[in-house]
Image (tube, rainbow, N blue to C red; front, side, top):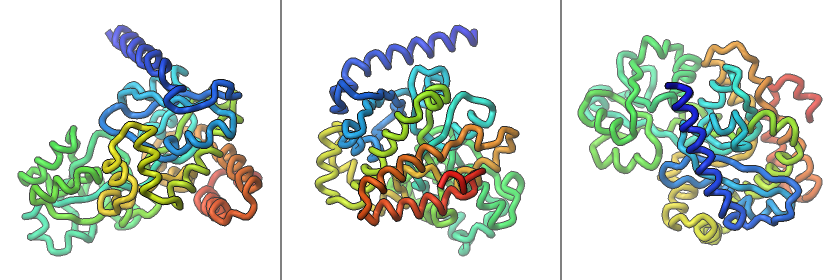
Length: 362
């Protein structure tokens, strides 16, 4: 039965990739003569836009890399990546850490998103706990999370390391599938606190829930989604990923420094997503809740999360910072007077210096 299911999933993945391949290159505007070609998977549910990949379309041709992004369901992404049906993906950090830690055939090599989750509380719980915004007062409370989410992993780590709490005993974490269902459970008083995506904050407040704070208020180095690759592809064609990251580094600068309205129009045209949604998702601070998109791999932040998994495989066996370092060095050389890229290098050193052998990389 398991083999039959896996076969069906694989057939479904192949069909989606074939369909996407018919239009992917044309949509992304890449040159057919590109020296390297990479296919990435992204989540298929709802709107999904990453400015590194979307604005990266400007620069892929400059670095002779053809990039095709295809939508897959969450449960299909890592199977497709591990067996080489796609070359890479960008997704929630918790999955590649666990998958790689258990021996999965992937490499984590770059950043895709940081931050973004928010904590809301049941109104009666907040009223009876005036200091509820201080996690020291959460003992005995319940918190709902999505199955195996990075928000849960980050919060448990914070409670353990910064508040000297046992997150498995002092707080009752409840798994509830679906963010709308989580909000309903908190509204009814079945759960005290919810970790929710920023897109659901307004809905939660309209239901009478109380805003506590974004998760980045507890953990500034909140590493969320990472860029990952099939390990065989990555190790055999590292230059392709160097070129990909060079495009993403330049896309990051554009996303951070250029006129927001013009960028929103550009991304709406290239992605087919509504301008208002893109602006809210990327630039409205009330809705981003500390979410940002930096291509830096951030080994230090990822390592802190990995330590909570209690897995034996060393993280550096499936985490690479060399390729990003090479890409950023080449960008700094290409634009020697640009302070933005020099600042990115400073950030890289500060957030990856715990990587084994880091001194030889820089």
